[in-house]
Image (cartoon, rainbow, N blue to C red; front, side, top):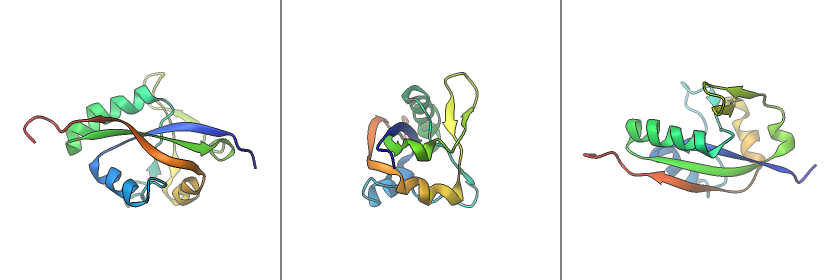
Length: 120
């Protein structure tokens, strides 16, 4: 098994962040039934855009997480472009999230946060 890792990002709201913290910053929580895909993104700018523009609007706050995953595991997922050329993400089926979590190296870290929206 190779030691190579790939850095990925995940924009999250407060509820998902609390579940990550409860997992000692080592795993993402299982998807809800209406969430068949887990979407980590390939660049910080895209994660920031989602956290700032979507998570804050929908849940009052947004956070950008960064984490390393074994590259040989990440290679099984085709990069998907979801809009602009920088909107690159992986589509990990919900049933594969546990295996994905087992391939995270080290801890998930919060690298940016966006405050609660005004008036909330």
